[in-house]
Image (cartoon, rainbow, N blue to C red; front, side, top):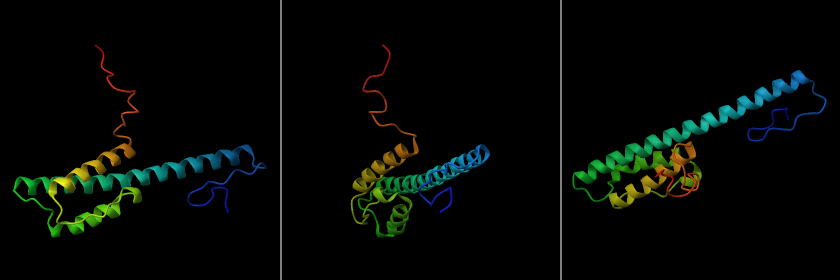
Length: 133
C-alpha cells in the first residue's frame, strides 16, 4: 500500500520521511480530500436537480387537476434514486397521490441541502428566536 492509502483511508506517514516528503504527502492528501468533497458535492447537486425537476413537474400536474403520480414518471423516479446517497433512497411508486410524493420530495430536498451545507438544522442555529429586539 502506498503512503496515500486506499480509496477511502489514508495510511499513516512513515517516520523516516524527510521534511520535503512529508510536505508533498500532506499536499497530496489535501488534494485527495478536496477531490472527494468535490465529487460528493457534484453528486448532491445532481440529486437536487432531479428533486427540483420532479417537484416542478408534479406541481404542474397538480395544478392541472391530476391527483396521482402517472406511470410515465417512473424513469425520473428511478433516476432520482440513482442520484441520491444510499441512505436517502426510497421505494418510489407511481399511482400514489401527488401531494404525498411532493411532501416526500420536499423532505429529501431539505436533507440534500443540509448535506450540501446550504441549510442548517435548528440545532445549528443556536436555538429559537435569535432575533434582536
